[in-house]
Image (cartoon, rainbow, N blue to C red; front, side, top):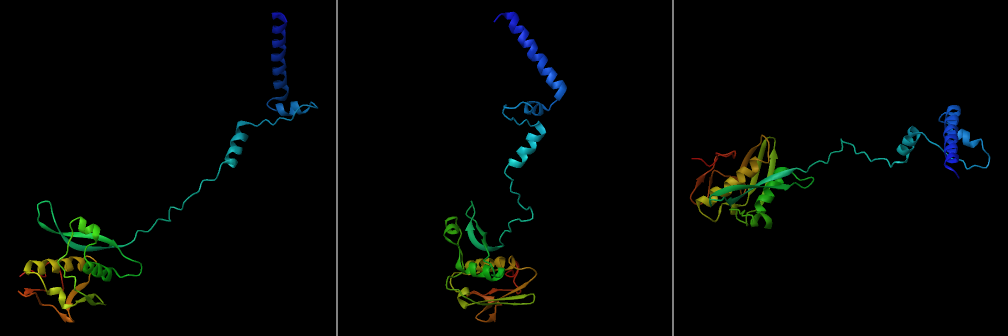
Length: 211
């Protein structure tokens, strides 16, 4: 085939393309379907393809922003520890309150248990005697009565008694709101505690042991 023949064929093809476009516009599918025996092609516009893609895509799961995971309430328990300069400090630890448990009840029970293994490894300790038992905890209006066994006041000197009292005061005050806290030992309100007689002002607060 000569170059002249090739050029003529190309020109005819180009002219045929423009003739078909002029007559049928973008509806090439209609033109091709008029010929019997030819395969049926489907021609989709960009808009149609985009709509089809939207349908085919897997729906994205949407989460309700109102369904926020509720954080569990925690109780503040106060133990003792040493700072970098070996000075005694009150170390606060937080523990999740079990469902249905009163905040102050749970806090006092955990205080008597003392620090757990992890807290001990971090230097926490307690001055509250392990023999101490919670005999009762009564809530009456804005009044809370914590009734310990008398073991609470035995063992250790004045500094130890002072420290355990402050552990109790900080723990009880920080786990109640607008409540008056009272300490009882064996059913009797405490006014003096320990062998050396530390004066206790009630209801309990941060200044209850000041002279």
